[in-house]
Image (cartoon, rainbow, N blue to C red; front, side, top):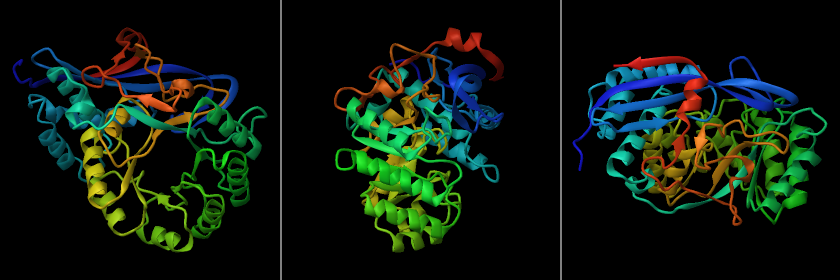
Length: 393
């Protein structure tokens, strides 16, 4: 066994990717299908170098790269010289540093340290976590609706896309509706999809907090009840944060609800479960303290007899889910019938993908089996497209 590595330096590289048939707002927070138009979006690449030569790598798939980079740079400086394999201690150190400023900078650093550990031990991350499975049932999770003739512009278009996904092998389909949060429009979409594929695949609905009031959420929730939805996610405009509001919602509908995607720490998410505000835990390794934070939340949910669902797609999400018994579906998001998934980056090597066609004939995705996160990045392409680099030593 090689000597235990200490963290020698951390590189945080911002780079641009070009996404066809898609536009985004200047911040990179919002994306939408726009035929014939391409958008340049910025992403973040993280490398943590150990003094024994081992390197931990992670490239989060989604936007908000500049926010994550600045937070990671502020926190990462405190990791220099620390033992790279002491992930629990490093996680605790970083959490103490985030008082008053939030925890978004922890995730990417923690995931890169798990990748480093896997390469040090020559084992995939899911095995280091305990291991449970290597195939993950997947659901198709749509991008938000649009107003383009050939896009997700009508309830029938959503139903057509659900049927396409069913024919591809997906056993679950989740709708993100239109950003306006119109009760009638959202309800009609849910009904159309359920009429087309209900009973043949599980159907989920994510309001993304766009419904304006608790009353709106109750009304749409009763439509979910009537159509047998698997879950109702982030129902209304409290931001997915109100324990009392979601307790009230649960008294009025039968469909299981899912919140805590917008909660950034273990303690508050656990409080929501204990209070009965949600029927599922929700973990996002990128934002919830990395694989360490996500795994802690999975155990908290298991101790309460509850399930946890992992938010979004990517290698870290696959490894976390692969180590958990109490989780049901891998989210292939954000997909659309006419444009690529912007969260599946063109910098993966060796065939890794989270595009719509990433599932096998059984509707599953595989967990990468190589050391660490188990797949390779095209660092030559990342460096060629780099726009900024921060080096911590």
